[in-house]
Image (cartoon, rainbow, N blue to C red; front, side):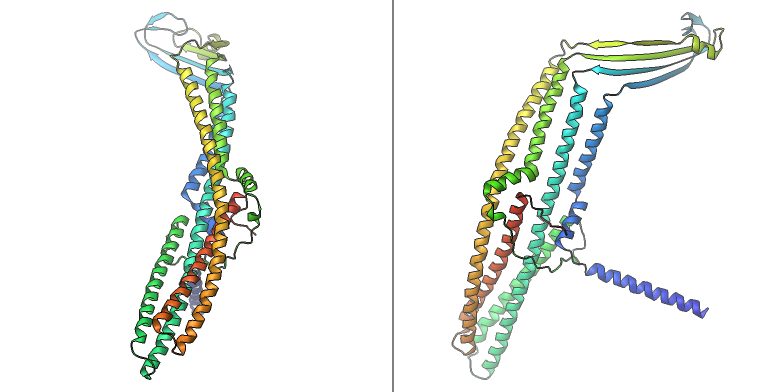
Length: 447
């Protein structure tokens, strides 16, 4: 009994430790950019809706294929007749109660309907292609949105580090100044400016912490996660882009964008669908030819033959062709054709607009990258100058040759220069990602 109890306790301890380890692992999980993008694409509601549209396209194709097949329907009827009723076997009035049964089967096949079936099948194929483009576009948009949110979190994190480090310097200067004041080397008023600087930096830290929390919540909502308090991303270093895409001409990037970006492809697919709708509508002007086959049999209670004999004696078949020629239908066909033509023209305008938008976006993205790179390089030069100025000011402040106000101004300028470098760095990274996207380079390069 003691051995069993000992084993039971041991199992409970192991289970408890595993549970604690799992909880700690869940709490300390840090999401990479690739994990965020993959998770968002798999769980985003808009993506799921687009996937349903793609499944609907398969159903439409199945229905279009079914339009080539014959129809087949069977029927049966059993009745108890009273009073003066027609006997279905003798076809005579019979003024007595009798039972009757009839059954039949009918088949119909469309031989020609202006090739509407064939055109409808082609339309379903075009619609599936368009829906697949829409799904890909939805995934691309989500990936870009996630990348933007992810980079915003990284920026806020680095910004917070800079502000906290700068505040540590300020606190050290306050401590040193207080010691000099107590020693009688400096007047008491020299510490007030430093204390004001410390308070301002504390406000900035709180503001950045709030911005960091909001940026995490924004990414959580994109990922459809609710663990706002424990969610965090990995502290990965996003290197500066070493892309050669800026070496390409804007015309070359635009050509690649037309091949890879889905907006134009969706618009082109919509034009193809609209043209097919016009062709389908025009099919109603043509006559339709169909073939039919029917079989029926019957039984009545009051006839001298038994049930099986009647079914074989009184059965019949019908086979033939049916031709329908449209002559006048209240201009319904003409109206459908005219509306289809208008939709085609509208789709062509939308295609032209999509091409213009893409051209504008590509040129804008190209210029944004060039300007972002210049801004980042300028911010780096400014930071280097501000750093040297800050170090020089600190040396003068340490030996009493600069008052606390002027030193605080130099400190603020250095801190702002650091923030500008971070801001322009992540702006440059994101702008480059967008331009690469237009050039057909995947946002996430999977290993």
